[in-house]
Length: 335
Image (cartoon, rainbow, N blue to C red; front, side, top):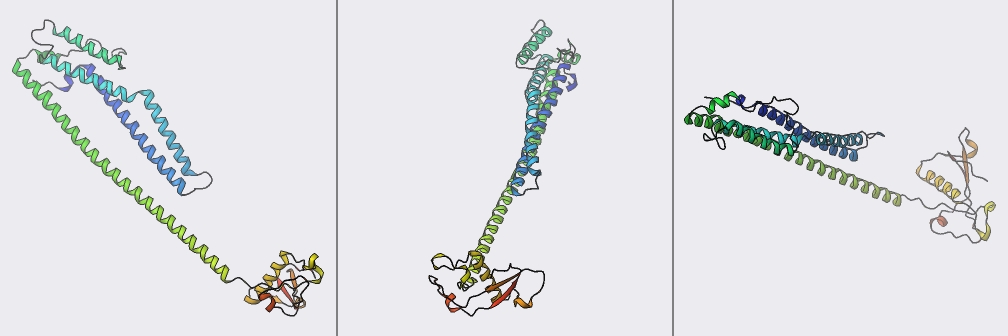
């Protein structure tokens, strides 16, 4: 005789399907949370790397991913997917084991028992009552499984056979089938473990590569900025123009013998002197220039020294007779 999986009680089949369904739901919730966490971390990294305009798209995606993690977690907690998976699996395995023991005269349903069917129901209800205390939902309470179907006809037929037939059926359909099932599950788990292990290794290497490339880019940018800043400083120090002649203007003599020229006039003199030397500015006699552009007439005194005026360095050697030049693009100086 062959005792098949379909020969077990209807209560077993319902709890087995419920366990498989809740297991799938729990695994999918965990997978969704992990994927959302990875997406949130990646979006947060891209947010710090580049700003995508005012809305900051990556920051919004990261926030949505973290919110999705919370939503999935709350939903899985309210549905109690993992606890119901474990409870239904425990109930299904308990019913299956008890049915096999009843069918092959296993303890406590031996040949010496006067009423094995009543003993079977008593032991079954006692074990299921413990599971109900832990939160298991009995499908018979909701009418999903009819009452009185705990013992099937196949169970009674196997129980009525001789010892040798019962032994062969139990070894073939129970022990060997269970061993093969665990072997298949072990192989599937081994492949999944190998796949995810290599995936984690590849993702770790990719993250390390991105981190090193980011450090390299930051170091290169800092070096270029330092080199550029040093070059500008050396250029400014080497190309500093000599001081313009600050001859005193009689109309701007201030108290204490100072010439009264402000910083703005000194700047204009320096600009005019640099334009004459480098050819960067266009100079022309004041009387020969016509047009809408504003003009500046810079008078350079002829080395006349006012009391209290201190002249040093190049300014003394560059004293020259007064001349009148016109620089385009600058406002006209007062006479």
